[in-house]
Image 1: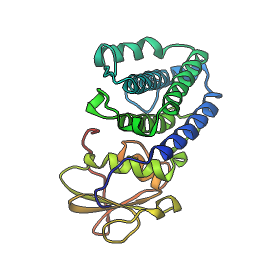
Image 2: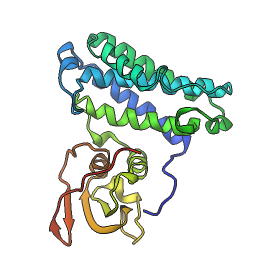
Image 3: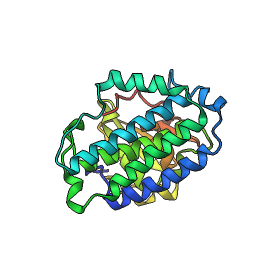
Image 4: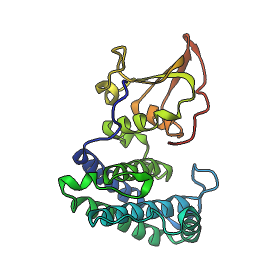
Length: 251
């Protein structure tokens, strides 16, 4: 697709965050202490680590927004990344009951922060990455949607809305390495609303040697996010099977 903003309208974002949180609550009904201690798809992290991370991000996002409305700038994590990592380690081994309580509270705190925003507040400055309330709200949208699938509690990228798939692909476009053009071509109705520069349904990312990647829109977004697809994805170069190049770090 042509290079346009990766940010969705706040109303779309808020509605989708609520739906993702509801799916999260349903998934957490299955959470057990054994599942908390099980390995997650993220290297070195258990499911408990993922849940503790979600709590930390949600609390930090809500705090950024709450202070921004009062014209204050605060750090995303008190004590920076070392404190963030220590908090995750400290909370990872908590009971399933404690994780469910804390994740739900953090998610609802974010939604309360959203609900308090006026139209002009979305552009208020925050300290995190010198962004705005809108940019940090999108960060929560990404984190909630992606880590919901990392819990492996029966929820896959199939629950990602067209708006979230669109946002993820656009936001993560800088991960495509130099010299590569990825032509992402969705094969499902979710991707049918997207039109690339050449008129085909899908997204064009980067420039250089062409790789065509076909699959469900959620799977295409998952690949760019560094997650495994749940369906069949075909990657081709000049019509022959190929592999996805190593992607650059997250922006």
